[in-house]
Amino acid sequence: MSEEHNKYTVSVWGSHPDSDNDDCWTGNDYESLRKALDAFSRPGDGFVWAWGPSAAYVELCRFCGVNGDGVEVWERLALMANPNFSPTNDDDLYDDWQSEWAMQQGMAHGCDAYNEAMGWSTEKEEA
Image 1 (cartoon, rainbow, N blue to C red):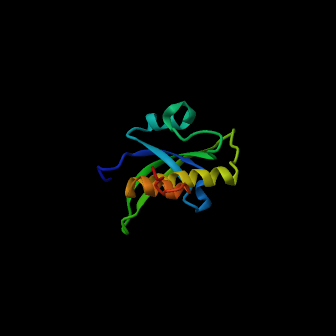
Image 2: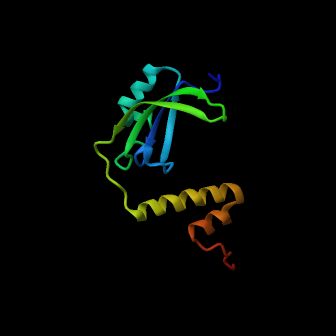
Image 3: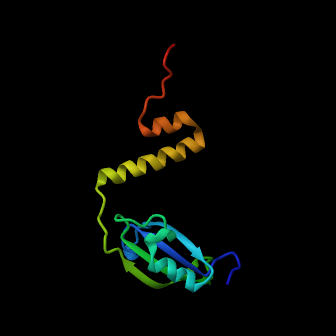
């Protein structure tokens, strides 16, 4: 096993992990199964920051190594559906996406790029 990888990860998903849509929002890595199980069993207690009613699943996986093609191999140990899951509406998703995109544009290209990505005027007012 590669030394650069922690052995376990707990991930939050916006849809089922097998949906093949890369909808993993975030994850935390752990060196021990005990710590990973603790985080997995109590995702809303601050272990996984994205846990809330719009998160659909939490998943616990173990790192198995890297295959011959250089792809990481993970084994799912547990998957839990969020009993409080409530899908967000499309407007909320668009707002979140726009805000994230604007932040990336701002970090890469400055304030005017952020404002432009948010749809705000970038013209300077005359004094």
